[in-house]
Amino acid sequence: MSGSVRLANGRPAAVRGEPSHARLLLRDARPGDRAQAGTLLREALTPGLADAVFGLGAAGASTYLERLFARRGTLWSYDITTLAELDGQVVGLVSHAPWAVLAQRRWATLWSYLRAYGPLALLKLIPRIRALMHASPAVPPDHWFIPCLAVSPKHRGNGVAHALLQTVYRHAETHAPACSLYVPTSNAAAREFYDRAGYVERDGAASEALRRLAGVDGRVRFERTLAGGRPE
Image 1 (cartoon, rainbow, N blue to C red):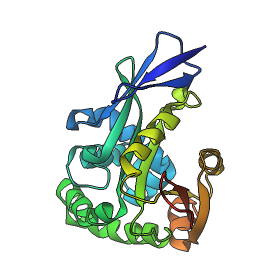
Image 2 (cartoon, rainbow, N blue to C red):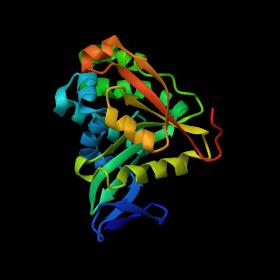
Image 3 (tube, rainbow, N blue to C red):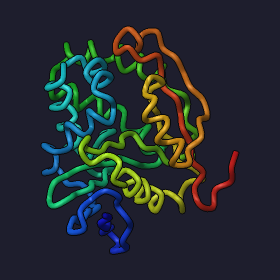
């Protein structure tokens, strides 16, 4: 039995596996959504990677991501995030923006960390962030980028991620030739999902430092040509 998705523009889309009365609403995120967003953001980064990079453990990483979410102008801020709500509960989110915009938000993100945890914690964070950057392939400057896409585990496989991606494409297709994102090399399930969603693996990068931190060898960049874009 399938339900329907009520998008921000009012157009319906199918959601597999949900009861017929369920309604999925896609909407812009707000600062007040932080409590429900922190865990999803940590899940999007993969828990092991988030905990290792921030060096705060599970609870600390989620709390930090909540603070970044509620602070406008960071890499994981509400102002670049779309939420998926089912019966009033947030069940998924996607952060997305032009790569050039995101590149300008790195210092704001570090500043937010400094304000939240102090200079000593920031000194520990910098080498971890550097390791993450070295384990990340370069993104073409004109691409739209997805820092995070996450769906609550019990709602996976029901079309929530697909609906969120469609929202990204509607924002991006008139501004960018393609959409890019990173996937950890060790995350076979995510790589398979994006392959089915029409993404192509373009390049990857390995990092011994990141492997020591989080057991992840590096990250792969996946790319999907958008409507009007020309395949490379």
